[in-house]
Image (cartoon, rainbow, N blue to C red; front, side):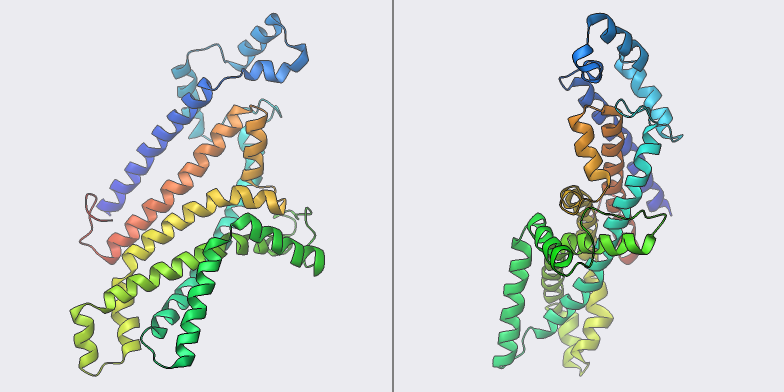
Length: 322
């Protein structure tokens, strides 16, 4: 519990630093939101009045302090573009991106771990059939890692939307009104995100387990007549989990980043599409909130991985190898 508390405290400190950097960065970016909002009607008097209304003429640290206090109470400010509370605007988008990320992560873990164990069992097998299977596995794994997700997404959209008509591209059903239909739509985007990361996870798991299989305790257990598969499942897999859990946490962070592109390909109304639109419109309150939420997701994944790793191997501590 003490270790978990330290990790959570570090998470909160990290999020405060990230939010401050995001706030300062967007304040320094060239371009005045008031001028952008007024467009062709922008005059010096109107710009000054709008800046006063938006609070942009106050000191930076004062505005940041108010924003940070509001963040912990659910008040993320008001969108410049839509004149709506930011949280009300992005909450449905957060839910969509969260569902997409979780679905993709479940696919990665459900497919990559059995495939990784299967590829380990292929190692060392003799005979032409086993060599062909292993060669096919290696080639297919490299192909999955090499093809970028946006291209895979285009192929899947063409096949399952245009040809097979399993879903209608651009007609994403509401999660609250048709959860099953929304999940079916998200499934294809989740597969697009998962394919290269499944390949990377399989490769990572295979190399980690094969390295662990060379340890003395494994050779001793097998030499005493224990089944190789039983030793693999009962001992090697658990001892190989620390680097794998860390890798999966990094994968979870990469899924969030990758979803920004994939949401564009599949026309999914998630955080990625709103982030791109808000940057174009200089809607900085929305951009700041999305950046902090995405950063929180990334830091949270790393924190959970550290806590899990410490439970697997209590020797790992805050300054250790977790």
